[in-house]
Length: 301
Figure 1 (cartoon, helix red, strand yellow):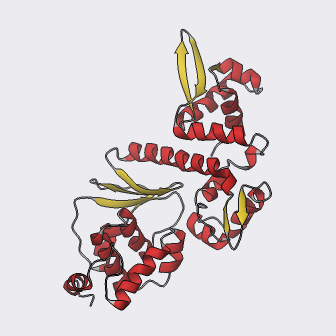
Figure 2 (cartoon, helix red, strand yellow):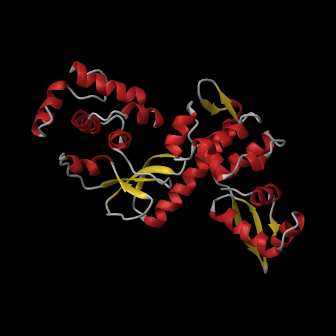
Figure 3 (cartoon, helix red, strand yellow):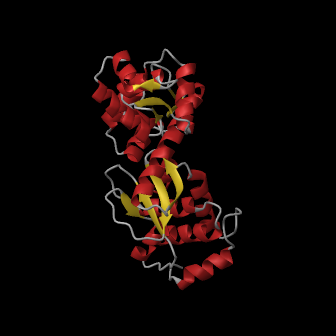
């Protein structure tokens, strides 16, 4: 994700530097220095400015560039090349809350072997701590902020390139949920939430489509359609009602497994309790009579 060479360049461009200066400072060719600085610019970590015939590179003023700089200042002795690989950032991006190795593998589609390889590399240097599961050391909040802002920047740029008028509703790492008025066909983008309900004979007509972007090689499941419906707007009575409809119709056995993966297990428990006890038990849950009328219309109860 961020190579060791890019990290070295980022550290020396605290003030404007020429490509020639960068190349000599870290012992690489000018063409290599130019290629890596272009990557830093593309990823919002550097910016270029021309002064006459010369081009100078300095750190970008983006939020994630500032967070990365702060992390370097706080922890200058950490082995940086062990932290910023794709797999490492991918796993760190989901560890805001405690996760087991099995949950990490489920979310990231990485093998258990690879997950343990990452965890065993980051735990000894204090980036990750372990109780029953793994989580980012609270001392490294700056790193967590950088990861959040970095992926947010990349996600926005990627979605803007695919469909500029779309809006991201939820994101974590390289995965994000968004809405669009357009029909989108893309290898990393899957129709989801209420846009998939017609597959279950629950016809819902909306002016927008809901999509989920993931670079992980997996298909979405029924539990994720339910969870994504909630994540579109967790406080919406309408969305929670639709989530209940699909849950009650399909009763997916892995709902809590996926709810934990998305950190909304308490929310799912409230909805299931509502369906079992048939009375309103939270502000985002409809009255039972209202829900029953809709469920009867769809032939669910």
